[in-house]
Length: 169
Image 1 (tube, rainbow, N blue to C red):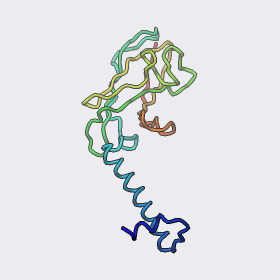
Image 2: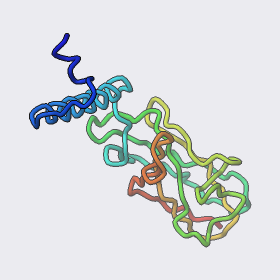
Image 3: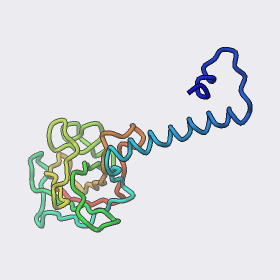
Image 4: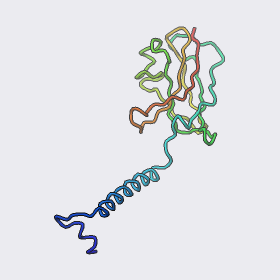
């Protein structure tokens, strides 16, 4: 024990090899805490680089721009690495052209078919459905995004590089 206590004495000068030992110990401690946090929290959160939209099912009939729900789109999200359905992933839509977004159906620039709700969770089959409605006549392109509420703002929303077009009459 006395060989460890000498580090706590006042006015102690350190040799260079002792300083590197301290830095090495702090580095190893930092790595251990980081790895321990990752191991305790489970698997890393799936990101857009590991997710893909494998199926987009649109209604087979015409939709009217009367502001009422006309149908729904069902998206299937899978994990690229395992080809299994991605469960518990927040998925949202954004109308590509900002001039076609309406206040009633938009929440912070996201398509919001329900009041103050723009993102929906995928179910056990990796499917998520969105009610389709519009106040604007014409073709609307919806871009598909995922959201990670635990991420910082820059990485919170990630595009899945997929979109679909719905024509409203």
